[in-house]
Image 1 (cartoon, rainbow, N blue to C red):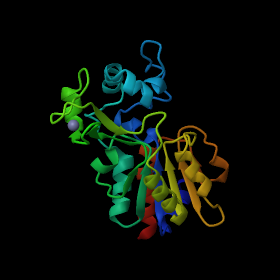
Image 2: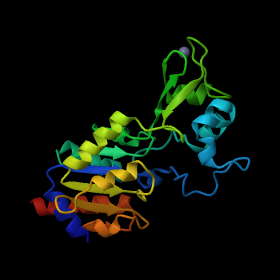
Image 3: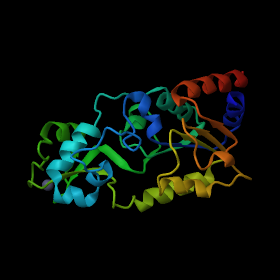
Image 4: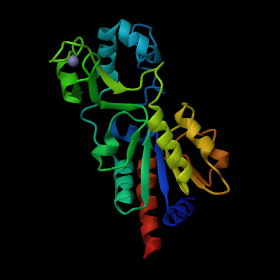
Length: 246
Ligand SMILES: [Zn+2]
C-alpha cells in the first residue's frame, strides 16, 4: 500500500491535502474530541468552546482555553515538513486544515486554509484591533483586554455555534474539486462541514489517500487507506516517491 500511495503521489498534478487533529498529535497537541481528560466542572469541552459560553463566561472560557487549547511550545512534525517540502517542489497545491495551532505555517507551508481559524490571531470585539498569541497568553488572565479600547479580545477560532468562514469554505471546495489527488491525514472525517468536502470527491476522476489511525466513513471510496502513524508513514512514502523519480 505504501508503494501504491507513492505511485499515486508521484503522478499527482494537483495534490490537495486535508489535515485533522491527528496531524498535530505527534507535535504533542492532544485531540480534545477524542480526549477524556478535558472536562471542567462537569461542563463538556464543546459547551465551553461555544460562542454563547464565551459571551456569558469569558473568564471561564479563557481559563479552559489557555489550559487545554494553547500549546505555544509545540513545533511542526514530519507530516508538516514533508508537506512543506512537497509544496516547495510544486507537488502540493493547497493544505486545507481543521487545526487551529498554526503548525502548517510554522513548517513553511504557504497555501494553508485554516478552516477552523487559528489561535495565533486574535481580535478586539469592539475595535477589531489585532493581537498575537503571546498577548493572549501573557494578558489572558482572567480575560485579555484591548489596550486601545478595553474591549474583550476573542481568538479567531471558529467556536461551536459559529459558522465557518464561507469564503474560505468555498475556496476549500474549489481546491477539492480541482484536485486530482486528495490526501487526508489525521481526521476521522466525521466533523462537518469540513468532512463534507469529501462529498465533492469524484472517484472516477480523482484519487483519494487516507492516513488515519482509525477507520473513516470514506475508507471504502479511497484508493489507499493506511491506519498507521502518519508521521512515520509520510516520510517513508516521500522516500519511495523520490526513489521512483530517479
Ligand atoms: Zn479594541
